[in-house]
Length: 485
Image 1 (cartoon, helix red, strand yellow):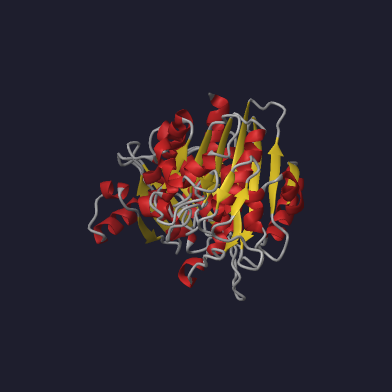
Image 2 (tube, one colour):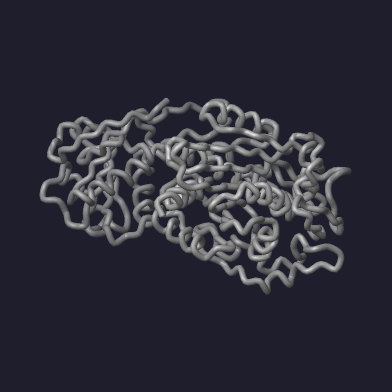
């Protein structure tokens, strides 16, 4: 069901607020002279021993005379996007926890401030109102049906924001789908349906085809599964007015046991989410399509499982990748870089103007950054700088990590062209990027996003679900920058 939107431009029109059951008041730094429910806000601030200015640090909520709920928050133009989104997310949660049918967003202040606040609040309410997969037998869903924006009206009906919400919803829903429901075969069927719905061109490199063309790095991982359902799926969105060509690549390991280097139970739990990178890539493709941006997008999804079995690849094997590079296998749980290697080669052979990959690739990136930031590494300084700037602009923060050539000395092999990784694990996030760079052809500018922040308990930035869809907004912003330059 499409979320309905009603907009009321006149901030002095208080009739809609009087009838509203759930209201988010988004206020400016300077307190408005006239504010509905002002006495209620004052009483709530007194109980909390707070002042109006404290609303720029933490929201307050109160029960309305009608029995509904209101939340008040102050947004300061000096706050960065992440801070603003975080404040809004926490204020919105108090409303959405009540499972309302309608939420009213009331914005106050100068015109420019109201415009920004309305768009950000619409995004935060919409993205957190998304229904995510739940398999509880007695679960009842009461979806949000309407958002009313009071105090600002946007002519385009927030079309690009809606596109971003759709992409985020797809990424989170796929990531949260249980592994018995999202095998590579089931995933491919889902992608086929989406391709038909949105008019994407679709090609599949199944295992038979991958063996034939010599994609030994991908096949080494995929052959451990008893089902021959792994594939590299290529989707393409090609608008007639495309100004740039971007490739988006995603790691799609639908379940990761670790292979012969079996993970302990603590670290295997939740490994159905190891396909999050592919879900983010697919979410970006959907968002770009919905927003009708004038950019050609080639989306490459590396879909497989890392299982243990008689045919599973082993330590000390040497396999040959699609580009002819021989790889010494050091650890079977470093499967993500193996499936991405051949996928990046295929993606770079199409010669895009820019390429970005998303992957839940290394535990060392989370050790380095925690789960509040993700890391970016790559071969092009301009695009790395753009990635950091884009993350700051949209509230999905990324940190640039080293990519110096001398790191690759650790991957020197006595028997093959390169080692897959080291057993020591030191700076594995950097070594993984150095490894991946060996498989990019034609000098394509490339950024690798290691998704250390894809899951954070209680949410991150704008999104309140643990699995937060990190990367979709970042990717959409980078695609926008690609055609605006």
